[in-house]
Image 1 (cartoon, rainbow, N blue to C red):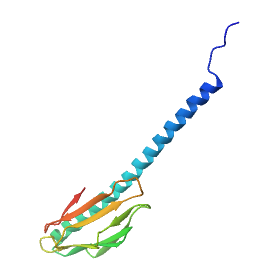
Image 2 (image 1 turned 90 degrees about the horizontal axis):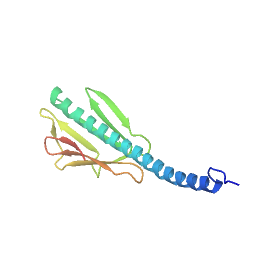
Image 3 (image 1 turned 30 degrees about the vertical axis):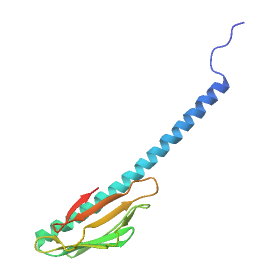
Image 4 (image 1 turned 180 degrees about the vertical axis):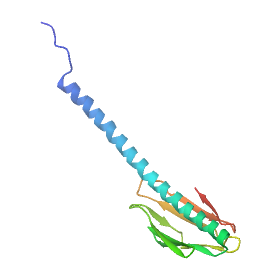
Length: 143
């Protein structure tokens, strides 16, 4: 009598168990990558808003500023219109003691004597990203 071809139930269960373990690790890596992407997007958005108020101070010859309202929101005023941005859930900003960036007219100079560093962070497992406003020129750098 010849032996039947195919897989035994035990072999199929072992393969499914291994596939499940690999899939669990992959799902965790994808989740962390997605969360890191959200942190990066929030940092880039903050940097873009800082660059926007900086260029507006220069163009309109007015003083502009960005205020850190809380760990999850900030506001800025351009041409008399105040805009408040709220960060996505799980994302926060730490100003390290700084709650404001001000660009003064006519040359859009940063009025802070020390560099301003905003740290944008997410849940555990993500790398924080720094948004720096450096020097008198107020150049914005994302690191």
